[in-house]
Length: 411
Image (cartoon, rainbow, N blue to C red; front, side, top):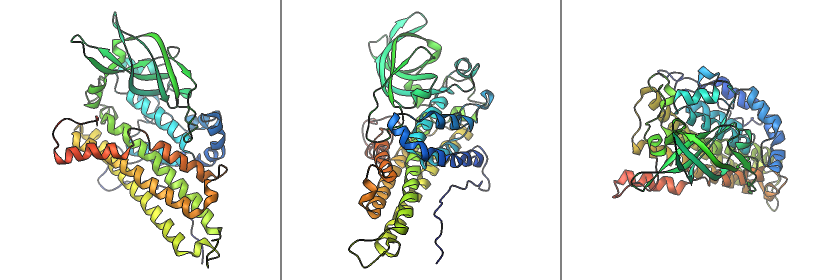
């Protein structure tokens, strides 16, 4: 019997009645797939170095995959969420850390498109290849200064900061009534530095080090308040003309974590199936795992889980992109569903990868096995606060049941 090839490569097509604003860009998705051999080849080196190697960053740059969300007027692709998710999944199929780095730089760039045009011109006007890393957690408290604020602080987990020119960081802004409001400010080249601090067991190549800012003035026009961003009350003047500049903030920044999981799940399937087609089964009547019903079932169930995860991610993209097209900002329940879909993606892929590695045997867990790196990456990537299944389910369930009290997290 001829053995089929398990490609599962996304083949974006445009459904009847849809538009380019809600469907994936097949050309960009194909570019990500074409880079996979290089990304896989250099993945282990990136893990040792603690950041994606320069050759891979350069290849991503040349293919325009680090400016997916940069507006067209600055030479970017202005891509929608569906395109971003499919590109990131394609990159993650080669290496999780590479995809994670591309994810954070692209979403940092998209966050920046919600700022006033004046600020966007400051970023991309003279350098269309400028890139923003983003750490939204309010890890510092600003001090008032004439026309703005003085900021000092340290922001760990700044993924992709080594390849960024600008930094978006969160901090608390004191209010007249004695309270504080979370804000996000934009910092230019030379206003921030990086301290090496990223030494994890998984996603080792993301360069998620610590951004350090020391007494830097940030003017008022480079600041937005976080609750305004969550509500879609953006500072950009282009909401009526630029579809992508009005997409829902947290959903757009959440579904991307599901993309990494889907890509890692596909990578695990690629490697496990290849291994199982030639692997023996010790202590069994089956001389080849490919003939064993236990292993056949494991592969089938794992593939179904990854497929289901991808479908959920695509549903979230549909909701996000339709919202951007219509200009109808989704309510809390709709936004919470995106977060819950992302948490469910994490659960499904974790289950699939665990099943695959156990079927593929103990050799899959050796440090020399690419499956081992995928296993660690899936666990590490799924621990991000915006990907954690339990938090997502709790907030979604509260809204579905109409529980008393406010939400425990913003959506």
